[in-house]
Length: 297
Length: 73
Image: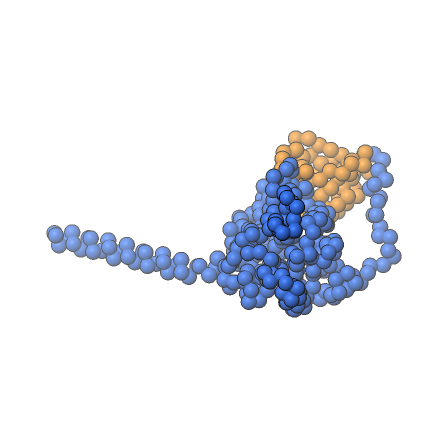
């Protein structure tokens, strides 16, 4: 069989050397193991171009899914799944009566992704250790270890992790673990034309996000707030903070985000205590019944 | 089951792409009953292979690969 010319396309890089620490050029950050990295997604800058979705699918070789029209505005991905690790939401709302034309929609757009929680519930629920925390403080599923038990799916308070029906394993965003190891910025952040998705070292991102929030308040966007940064909504219930956090302008539920997410592990002790108390109560009731019967009452 | 011959051009975890003799790319995911493990994909890059697959992955543009046979170049 003849080799088609396309097979040889870009088989070898046009560059004669690898660009060391490329993320320093594209995102202004040098990627070093042992530090915390994440995403700051500023939804006020998102234009819904879906470049992040495409870049993610291209880099990770993920197949197109959810074929057909959904009827939900321009959203054809509908949700994060085993094959969609970035999802751009189109939320039709806020038609501004004073300036908008009749029938003109107003959109809230947001590129959703795995939050790479500081205390990740999926990681806590994984019985095989397939989910692990990387040297970049991100959470990744090791495909060769995942046994497809699915415990991580209900454990995630954001509904991010999904089991593929084809290979039976859990899949989610890896924050481009392979790219980080090569000194590259994650594909979605690099592709974002408006810098709505910003990649960087977490402390710097959080500082930048607070400055942006203050700036928006100064400019009259009073409802802008951070979701997932320390001390903000989303960083509740023992999660401490989210490595992928957001700047939103509407209540979290509008973006299909929980107002106060929690770690399921928080409920283990109360559940165990409730179970023990129930057992003790039933045992006491049975003991009382048998004692009464023994006395012939 | 159906099969297709081509060259494996991209492999990422259990996902790979095959380029047929007409230059058309085909997307595959290893089925959970596949005879191939994801670790076995990278050595097959740019090699000529026959992929036996189930065209039953209805919700995605891709196929479930069941078996990969290495062919002579």
